[in-house]
Image (spheres, helix red, strand yellow):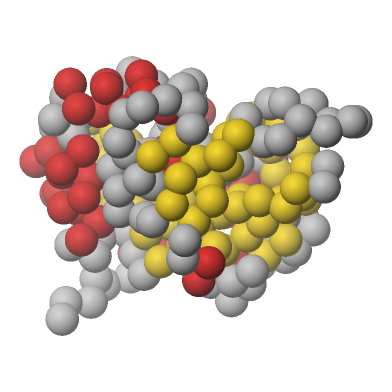
Length: 212
């Protein structure tokens, strides 16, 4: 079974993420050690909570640069919820710079009648990269579980792999670029569709990493 490093920085729902990865046929290793992250076959960056504390926890453990390095190496990488947000350059939620491997800023949902902020609960995906391996056997309009007040506004629309609509606002729900994948929703809370996504990531991890 492939080993997947689940990055521990005191801001992630580690137990649920690990159970989902185990169900998908992987061996998760919870770690904050760069050498363990680099040895693993794949890497998951989970996350709950606010942007600035999450970045400070990462930096306190000297994990920001190892994350950049492992993404640059071509190893399959999956960000979940705040783990997606941290990959961008900045957030309106705080002042800390993000990891910055993706271009863009996190924006807060605009208040409007009839919607709640945070965007919390089940909503339907609209796939914008429907042929991406992450979506194998998953189609548009499937339901997944969200909890967030901020969404990624990227300057590179080609990386957007799925969107979701909350009120009148259609925003990024997932991104994918080469070996890097990230979702704003919680696959570990998204029933069959979420487990399928984790299984698809594990299948991607099993593929040889191209070197070039």
